[in-house]
Amino acid sequence: MNAGTRTLGNNLKLQKRLAMSILNCGRSKAWLDPERKELIAKARTRAEVRTLIEAGVVQKKEKEFKQPMDRDEKLKRRVKMRMARRVIEEEGLDF
Image 1 (cartoon, one colour):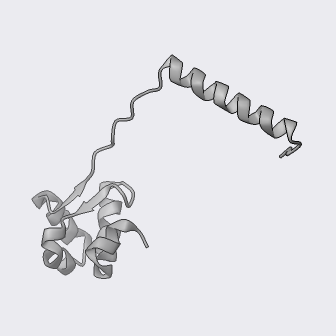
Image 2: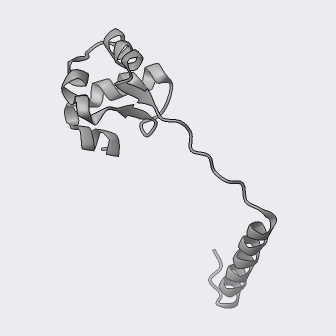
Image 3: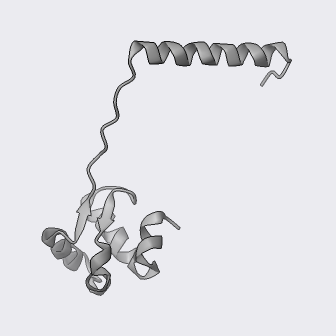
């Protein structure tokens, strides 16, 4: 069970699935307005879900921007991994 349907109730699985299909996104990106559960629950067809999308009741969340790693962060991570590998080799825990 995913987090989106857990907070909205199990009766909105169909609407969430239709919204994901129409918006061409995954579960975590399709947003159903928790304030309007009753209205969303009445939508049983793709056309009805489309009207909810146009009304803004169902939306596609934007992609979150992830900051790229800088040189120092990459170097620190590389050194940390190298040290971890060395410890594993010294203890004979070869994987």
